[in-house]
Amino acid sequence: MKTTTFTLTFITVLLTLTVFAAQAQEGLKIQSVFEKYGKQKGATMVVLSGEALHDYRLDKYRSITIEYDKAILNDIQHCLQADKKQAREIKEVISNGIISSGYYQLPAKEDRIHRYILFKMAGDGTATLIYMEGGPESEALINRLFIKRK
Amino acid sequence: MITDIHRLLDRYFQGVTTTEEEKTIRRFFAQENLPEEWHETAAIFRFLEDESTALKVLKEIQREEARPVRRTFRLKTIVTVAAAACALIALLLVLQPGKGSSSEAGSYVWVDGQRITDPAVVQRYAELSFDKVQTENNIITEQLQFMTE
Amino acid sequence: MDITEYKRVVVALRPSMLAIARRITGNKEDAEDVVQEVCLKIWHRRIEFGEYRYENLEAYSMTMVKNLSIDKVRTRRPSSDETALLERESESQSPDILLEQKDDADALRHIIGLLPPLQQRILRLKDLEEYETAEIAGMTGIAVEAVRNNLSRARKQLRELYLLYYRHKKTEL
Image (cartoon, rainbow over all chains, first blue to last red; front, side):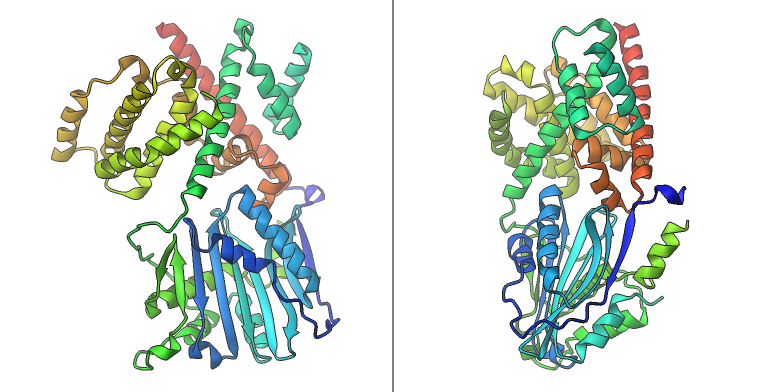
C-alpha cells in the first residue's frame, strides 16, 4: 500500500481549552436522533436513569445503535457537526469527510453538569451514538472508558 | 456517443467512474434496439438499474413500517470482553437485586420498537452499547499504525 | 407499472407474503429474505405483468413466495422427512411455468452473491445502494484506492461470470 495515496484518515485531536460561557445551548441536535430513530426497527435505544447512576456522578445515559442507510447516516453526521461546534474537547476520526468515531465533551450546564457525546461507526453497517451527563468527577471515568483496555 | 461509451466502460471496470458517468452508462444501455454486440453488457446495467430502483422502494417501505412491532423479544447472546474498563461500567450499571425498584425506575431499552424494562436485560444492552463506541488503544496510535501499514 | 404503482402493489402484498414465508421457513429473517427476492422479481418483470391483471400478479407472488420459502428450508437441511414432504407439496403446485424460469436478473443476483465478501459489499454499496466512493471508504474503513480496486475486481468478475452464463444460455436455445 502506498502511503502517498493515503487520504483516508485525518487525526483530529483538538484540545480546545476555551471554556464556553455558562450559556450552554439547550437542545442538542443529536437528541433528535434518539427521538426519530429510537423506537424503530433496526434500532436499539438504551435509556438509563435513577440512583444507580448517581453513585458515579452520572445523571443521564442514553444510547442508540442503529442499522443506518444513507439518509440516516447523513442525518446523524449533520447533528454531530452541529453539536460539536460547541464542544470544549474533541477526539475524533474523520475518514473522507465522514466522522467514523468521536468523543465530544460539551460545556457544562450550570457549571456542574458535564455532557458527553460518543459516536462510532462499526464495520457491520451499524452506528452507535451515546449521550451522557455527569458531575465533574465523571470526566476522568468516561475518558478512561472510552479507550478499550485489553 | 459510441466511442464515448467504450471509454466510459473502461473507466467503469477500473472502478473510477463518477456517479454522473455511471448514470450516462445506464441511460445508454436502457435504450431499445441496441446492436447485438451490446446485449450482454446491456443486461448487466439494466439489472443494476432495476435492482437499485426496487431496493430503494423496498427500503422506503420498511422504514415506513417502523411502527411498534408485535415482535417476540429476542435476547442477544452477548459476549463481553471482561476488560477492566468494562468491569467498571458493569459495576456502574449494576442494578442490585434487593435494592428495591426505585433505583431502576426510568431505565429501559427499546429494541426494534419493543420496550424492555427488565433491569438485567437493560444492563446488558447498556454494556453492549458502550462496547461499541470504545476505541482500541488510543486514537492516535491506532491511526498512525494504520497509515504505516 | 411505474414506481408509484410498484410501491402500492408491494405494500398491499407484503403482509400476506410475509405470513406465508414465515409459516414455511419458521423464522423472520429468512421470511424477509424471501419476500425481498420476490418483490425484486416483480419489479424486474414489470413489463410482463403489465399485460396481466392485478389478480395474476398476486397469485404469481404467492406461489413464488411458497416455492422460494421451500427452497430456503431445503438449503438449510439437505435431507429429512420434512423436506421430502415439502418437495412433494411443491411439485403439486401449478405455477405459471414461463414465469418460474430463472432469468437474467436471478443469474446476476446469484453471481453477486458469489463474490468475495468485501468485493460483494463494495459492489452493493456502489452499484445498488449508490453511495459515493469516498463514503464507502469512510464506512468500510479502507482507503479510497482500495475501494476502487475492490470495485474494479468485483465489476470485472461480475462481467466474466455473467458472460459465461450468457453464452451458456445462448447455446441452449
